[in-house]
Image (cartoon, rainbow, N blue to C red):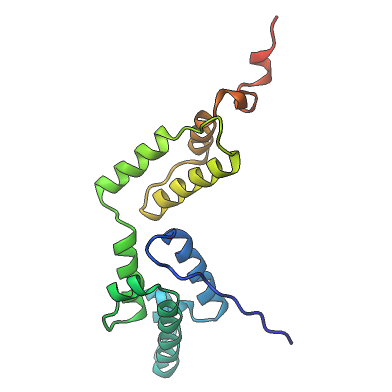
Amino acid sequence: MSSTRFEVDKFTGTNDFGLWRIKMKALLVHQGIHQAIDKEELKELGEDKKKIKEIEIKAQSAILLSLGDEVLRQVSDKGTTIWFWEKLTLIYFKKSLVNKLYLKKKMYTLKMDDTKNLRNHLNEFNRIILDLRNIGVKIEDDDQGILLLSSLPICYEHLWIPYYMRMKP
């Protein structure tokens, strides 16, 4: 039986915390220790203190090893894995009104430059949507579609102007 090794790039505070968090959670699931970052799942383990302690130690170690030095200094206090997870979330997912307004404005004013690559534009759009979702702002799928199509330059109008509207009688 072969063993596959997965790694998560270190979170340094300058890279995308939302993506790091998704990858880190997937790594913990892969290692079978994801319960350590979810209070409800940790409770479901029952009274097996030895198993809970083992999961806690492994998950905490995996998280700490996936942090850059600058970030590690911010969360170097002793605490549970859930405490580390929530502290990182509190620091890097600011759910303040100012942050929500900033991200919404960024989303509504996003425009693709004619010289920009479409893939880069889609990546930026998806990053904003993910950041909003991570702070509790839900944007409906049809609204996302309208916002994305509206952010494209005129040379992409064939994507969003229905065929029957372009036809001349």
